[in-house]
Length: 198
Image 1 (tube, helix red, strand yellow):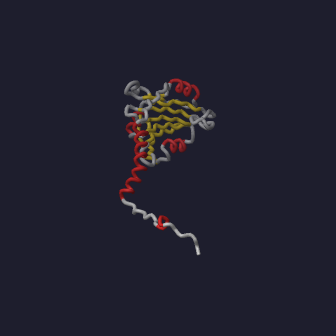
Image 2 (cartoon, rainbow, N blue to C red):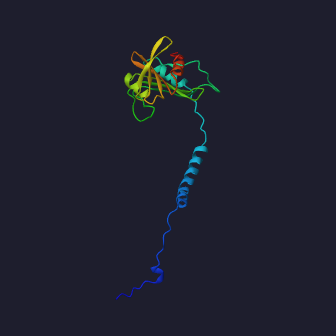
Image 3 (tube, rainbow, N blue to C red):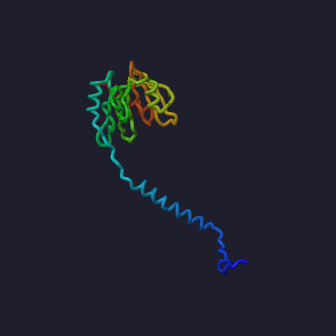
């Protein structure tokens, strides 16, 4: 016979209350309130970093001295307060370090990039890489979308698969010029019409 007789307290089991909707809402609030607070703090209180303008002149001069093709740069764009802001101007010669700095470039490549008055980023790219690769890179694997005539020259139109990015392409002898933006073809044509090699 066992001497283990249970005390009256041990025999009384705790009866678990059924979970109520109120308990579920309280548990949900414990998780969601801090999450919403953190989201609000990080999205509303981050500083607005100003756009870093660059002077394209040194890169233009170097590119024009070294490039095996004419370097095209937009001219006559309004600059200064409320105008276009050049944010990129770079020349990568064949064998030089790529813009990412991780490898030697197999092509010559010119890039000019700027924000227009509405803060839309536009890029002018020239490369002596295989035209198909240049177009696929700039259009994000896009598709042909017709043609534009700018200053009497025929440019191909390309559009990204999501329809957001548009590209004008001018195939020249030995190099390809692209004008790219998340903008209308009219906006791209307007920029392309300002391109000059001097």
